[in-house]
Amino acid sequence: MAISTALYSSRSEEWPTPQSFFDALNKEFRFTLDPCAAPDNAKCRRFLTKQQNGLTQDWGKPRVFCNPPYGRDMRQWAAKCFEASCAGALVVLLAHARTDTRWFHDWVYGKASEIRFVKGRLKFGDGKQSAPFPSMVAVFQPCDRPRRRKPHAKCLL
Ligand SMILES: C[S@@+](CC[C@H](N)C(=O)[O-])C[C@H]1O[C@@H](n2cnc3c(N)ncnc32)[C@H](O)[C@@H]1O
Image (cartoon, rainbow, N blue to C red; front, side, top):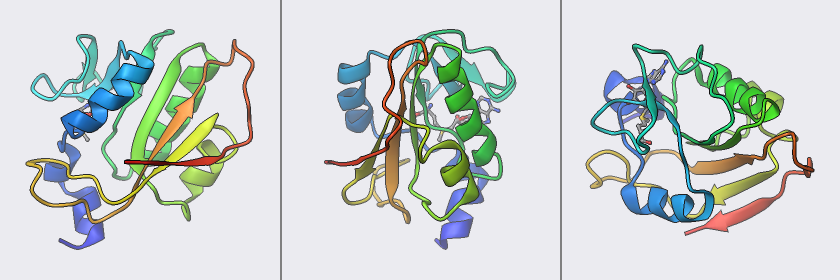
């Protein structure tokens, strides 16, 4: 599948985070809100769906795991992650590592406390095929805590 097709298809929009990958992050961060989910793929008991529109909701101050649809709203999701952290949430964003994009430079690079680049490719969906793109995890610490603003890379897997 071409990368553009993979990123923007409605099927890939539903691709769940690989459970073992989520479990490792959850052990570290103990998530309490999944703001982009469907009832059958939600990673937390508290979640928001497309119908509720997680982009327009006040996330409050939970510990958020955000694996949004990697489509045209990616910029809005990245901005929302940063802004929610400024309002007191801890936000961990799993996204495609498109380091050449404006959303990455405007809302992740220099804003996230930490950026971890995934070694190899994640297997989303049915878990049989590797994603046609690299992934990253950006950690936005709550603004009410002292915060390092210099992003640094750390390899996962
Ligand atoms: C890549 S999947 C991630 C699913 C799950 N959270 C996970 O990590 O396994 C993205 C999910 O966000 C949902 N979604 C799409 N637009 C949304 C919106 N505006 N608000 C909340 N959820 C949305 C999709 O229906 C889909 O279930």
